[in-house]
Image (cartoon, rainbow, N blue to C red; front, side, top):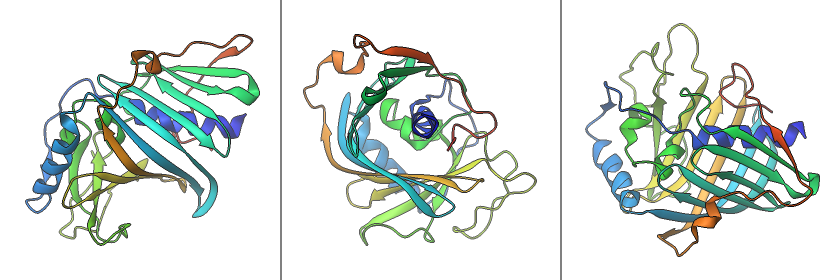
Length: 251
């Protein structure tokens, strides 16, 4: 069960929404048009749907690969239906994050806003779609190989993580002074459309998680009940706990 709990806890990172807009948003001129296109691509949608592939790695080694369908609905709701290699469900109803493992007959719940320090570009899809809410600085990350020549990878310095960062003249340098950042975030988008292709999260302990997205659908017809969790008969509810000091990355 410990292995399975690692994934939903990092998914809570994806579900966290910021409470306010913070100052000192830094975007270079060459990146501004890309960020604007990315925001415009998803901002008008009330509900989003996509197919995803998720890779979990430790020190460069792939530990687990999963696939399924994800749904995002404003404000602050998500549903991740894991279909392979086994069926699991991660759901955020706006207040509570649920992780349901049918094979274990258990459902773990965690308050969705247990920590305001858990911020990632994924929160954009269930929020106001403003990169400035999540990233204090955005720059090109050309050292990160894109999935396609028509894509671009952007580095997001998450608010709160970069208080000790040192801005570098090189767009590929993510220099830190003092303590290293807990985690680094990248998101890959299509240059022409702004479609989100991939999100990368890497923590300072060598743990990484990658989400690849495809088949985006804007405002698909889905019932509100899809974003509510009904506890099946015979399923035990477990109150989850956040791991200390790892920003939710708990292998």
